Length: 273
Image (cartoon, rainbow, N blue to C red):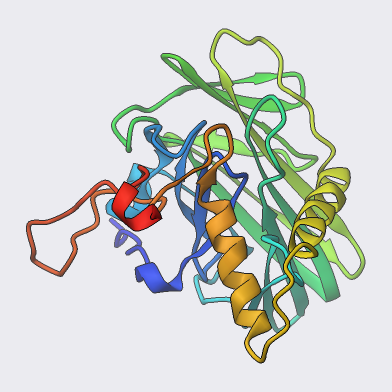
């Protein structure tokens, strides 16, 4: 039996979000935390608190769990870019959540930069913090996972295969090629996914953040740090009410071996003030 993957350090995760919820992406290309549809919803990816059996979504070069060689946010946005160099080429994974329309989306785009890279993606959806394994089936070209009131739809030109309560596949990407993955949450009674064009959503998401940042009038020596802090606070602001959550996580010990493990996914009036 293989050794379970150990989640990364909290400081090694990057956040993406749509101002109603957020997801945490590790340096190894794994989304280990995501609560859908809202900040305070039960997590469908909770490997951050356990291991991959609690739910995660990995997307990285096949045959390695090495961290990305480069990682950054694209310009003054909340669009994350991670790049790997392999023996056969280089590849970029673009992760983001577009500003919320009717339903939340997590979008991942694989972009070939040089040569040819063989990629692997593994999807383990576990609702209710890893306690519930969904029923998974196909609806046309989409993969659908349903459990109780929740459903997740995955749309991609790449076909994932199911086995051992997991869906995964390998595929190749060449220089200039882009392969999208769009994951959408719906109430389970909705019978058709809210279709999203990944490339158009990327452009719309970039424009949203760039226009919002343009309102910042600070022009001092630390503008880059100030803008990045403002973007983070904006991402943690629950759009329908304006409340700022303390953090997108819960149940992490305040100190190793300690007993305090607050739920930070609420607006603490003291901190917000």
